[in-house]
View 1 (cartoon, rainbow, N blue to C red):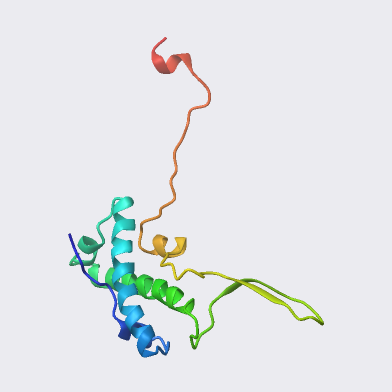
View 2 (cartoon, rainbow, N blue to C red):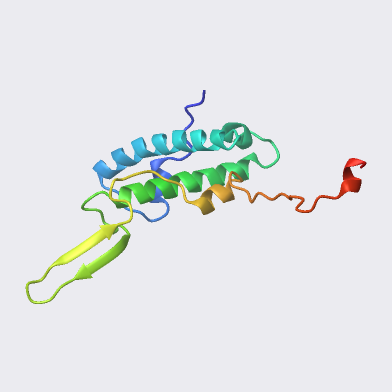
Length: 144
């Protein structure tokens, strides 16, 4: 069982995201959790992330994509923490008039770590499935 962490806090800050000391600590924990969650998600699709990264042909490139996916997941998680320099994504907002009222629904209010379908596709975990079904029965197919 691996406990490999696929990204570091410095990978987040290199993208231009400024973190406070508390956010850096939270990011380190989230990076460990996101790495473990991605390993588990991959295993549910029959893939072993660590062996794909260790592949001598394209493992280095795969590792970069894995790092990007983990970093983006953590940035989404951190963006939902209060008092951040970058604002969390709002999915719904409403405002009122004279008695002023505001209501907003945030994309990731619970600081959940999640991976987008497009990210899982980039890693080759989600693939389009196809198949065929014979609708008509032909007696000659069964030797009758």
